[in-house]
Image 1 (cartoon, rainbow, N blue to C red):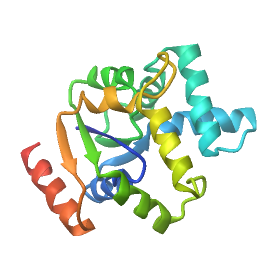
Image 2 (spheres, helix red, strand yellow; image 1 turned 90 degrees about the vertical axis):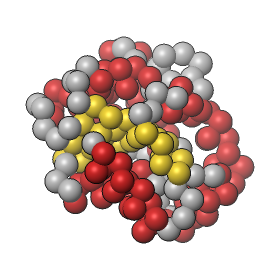
Image 3 (cartoon, rainbow, N blue to C red; image 1 turned 30 degrees about the vertical axis):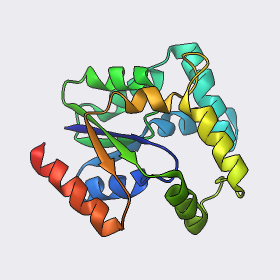
Image 4 (cartoon, rainbow, N blue to C red; image 1 turned 135 degrees about the vertical axis):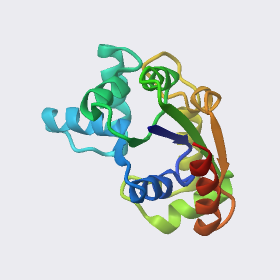
Length: 179
């Protein structure tokens, strides 16, 4: 089984990755492919470097290259894939035949609050920057860019993360029981 997660920044994807990993799935991210490439270039994996590195890899290898790189490393293992950001990545992962895409959604205000609470390196420190990043990641100007809106429209399941972690885990438990 291959489960993919998509959603906006601070929507709860990392929490679900941990949940699925506790169920025995290998945890990987489309960003892992970018991090590996950046390390070979000697570039620190900042948020900006990850975004631009992803664009560069997609320009060189096609819009689904990050997912294709992950599929090569997984070799059929059960896994949860985080950071799916383009329709071509979804299509590449669907080629395996056992892929399910889950969109994790939370409103902007909640995500902003969570982002401030988690204080993750690279997260924006002001709301205007947060909103600008959101807008830039929502729709791509070309196949090399992120397209979260189009990717979310391809989801097989939707999890609304509007409550506590316990609430979120109950929702994903229901999905898990149906898979």
